[in-house]
Length: 543
Image 1 (tube, rainbow, N blue to C red):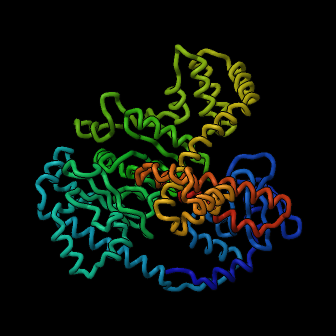
Image 2: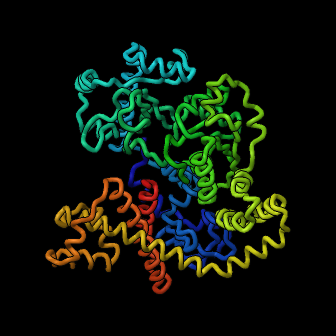
Image 3: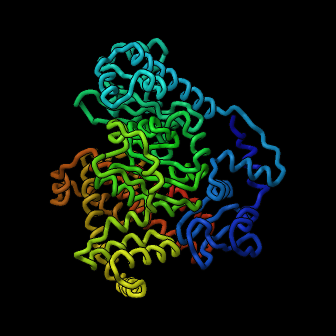
């Protein structure tokens, strides 16, 4: 059941964002406007502006911002509806609830997804694929496990699947709304073991599929839909939330079978980002239930890189979270291999968890090249809080035998040289941007300048880019025009180019808007800022 739009608007008009900001951080209010220390990133000088007149906030440091409900969401780690209810409770405001069309549509989609999941489960139960059952046996999973983890099977020949859809009045539009069709309009899952991806209420919102043959990618996920957002959803089993509350920590792994392996070893408090990189949104979700996360990604270079990336994003959310690394024995690629080898006691691995920063430092230490070690450490230090940086310098000092004072001096010396480094990085980035521009312009020409709204918006983000496209359109017989016609690229390269350009040009536009706000004090520009930041967030999560 949702909250009526009228209630949300009326409450917004009666509330003051300053009541929530000044109770959660240090700041000053002058009239209807104020400045405060941003609680979403570490700072000593106030850089977050807010206004009671429009109930908006914006941080000029980390660029976080939005309305009063967004602030309540971030500071309390809650969803939108709960943020409205928190505000209502503070002001004694009686909310009006309604069965909105959106809420009704969501329930219908989840109900349909449950039916489709039951169909896959019945396929597995009826033994429609001996290969899938044999494969699961090879992973040390039996019939009871198949039932417990609600594993299903999608047949190779989709005749029966299509009959099921027809019988249940499911059109291609319905399936597309559930994210179950490919870009060409075909059903995504064929000859695959099906893993149900659920929300925290254990309602099925998507599927993961493991191929039985060598056709297509080994693992495939449901496409984005209104009930399945990849950057906000994790794969876990039914007892996940209760076990997290009991054990007080979460274990993050890479894949579906890793989650199941931990479950078999007595740990239900395990989740996986299902083959995608861990996001800030997923960390935010976990932070509502625990402050400790144990990483157990694959025991290889890719797994180490995934762990290092967590170090880069862990401080980009308001809650203080502690991250540790679980180190598997070298002979096992992942926890699945350990489980399938007959290992049944991982208590020592859990007890010997390693601080994530220490793990990352150990990975960069090169005993033969101290200078290289320090250069890598400098990159890591950019993602640490001041306290973490100080502790990590002490740890590195002991590991490489150089005094802490010398390391601090070197770090400060390197900072003095930073502008030159930034110029080099900027030059490299511009080269890549030019490549992305060439690919997009080639696509625009291929489409005879008839592009969709998103690409049109992207082109209009930057006046120079827009002019270059307009010049090409006006001069179709130029050598420049011919050059673009000869550029070749894949669909994935085109998608990446669009995402990278959106991020690049949106960031430039945001900086211009911030400068304009500084000069004019026009807080109405905050809405434009928020729209651009949402686009950046969306496209960052597609990369």
